Image (cartoon, rainbow, N blue to C red; front, side, top):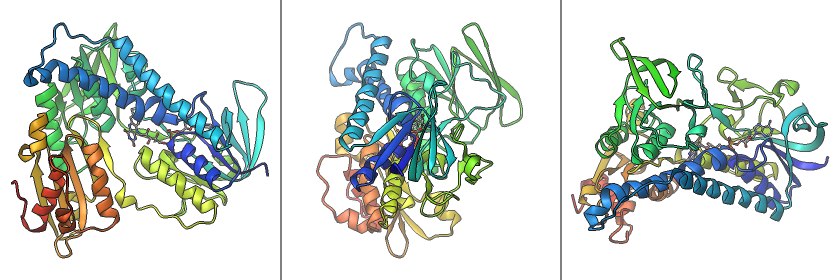
Length: 468
Ligand code: FAD
């Protein structure tokens, strides 16, 4: 065999798996169909969306919040081209970083579409050129996902677009319709709402971010309405979309079954993502799939139905998140090297990078109720936080859910300033099975937003919050 491991796909799952394999002394190759490494996350996902969220947040603060601090600005304007160029530069820096790391770790890389010839042989095809074949003892499939399309709603990539096109608009829409009130729709909606677009969110479920603790969606909806003028049409089933010139019309059925329509310059379809397995030739070696053929089936060691072939990240079950894909990449690499790694799927945080940010880990109140688990709850509002008052970010709260008998932290749900970073402490608490009182007794620097977590934990312990 030429290689110990061949990784197909260079997203956060694939590139991290490859680097860990190389660290463990395994001769490793990566196949990537695009000319840059990093997959969805670095090229059209996490990183570019955060670059635009940061630009739009600066603009929004300058337009609406600087005056509260006594800072006045004349003739504020946004240069869309510069914003997009900066975002592209951020992508380029990150993808170049992966090229550097592959070289540093002596990982061979191949550009092209990889497909199975047999369980150890991968064919690489690029632009009709003669196919090349490489052989490996182990194969890791890390081919990720693509935006889910609705069969009755054709995406023209001009006016009816996915997140990928929404990351490179050349103008600020006057009005933007977002189909889907999940993470991606609300993040991209926030970018353009902050820059002046009127944003309408049409969502089938009765609440936004419906998989998170219900209290978070309720608060986020209130704040996005108040701060950015978002309009929400929940319980609406989208039935179609058409374009006429520069106008998009989206039709939907409201909760009572009435036909309604929405007009905008653009419509972002953000109804989720679907695992990507096209062209892999899974049938050639009989790799089993699940979820109507959408996901690759794996066992508890992330091995597929074929020995020596593993799958990780968005292409298998579980949260479609970059850090979940990364952890699975490390897990499989260590497994191949004969180690006994472990992933605690209950301690994988979920984050929404709106402002305020939303972040959570562990069980939601709804899940605990459904499981019939007895729990205590403690909340602390950022309105009572000295740090939040100083920065003017008093929307939101931290909620701690703890076992009623043992006081073990079961779930932490927060919406507030820098929640995306603050959740790390809660992840640690879950991982080390801390009690709410443990958190309440840990010294937190003052004044910081993290004190809200300590106070919520004290509230959960015995209603002992100091500043509530
Ligand atoms: P991907 O990143 O999808 O990478 C798969 C790679 O495989 C791609 O490069 C693809 O070209 C390649 N490939 C596919 N088939 C083949 C083949 N046959 N041969 C060779 N190469 C192939 N997650 C977060 O955790 N935080 C965020 O803030 C976040 N923001 C997001 C924002 C947006 C707009 C989007 C769309 C997603 C976001 N995500 C975020 C999700 C995150 O991007 C994915 O969960 C993550 O990229 C999955 O990693 P992966 O390695 O499984 O697959």
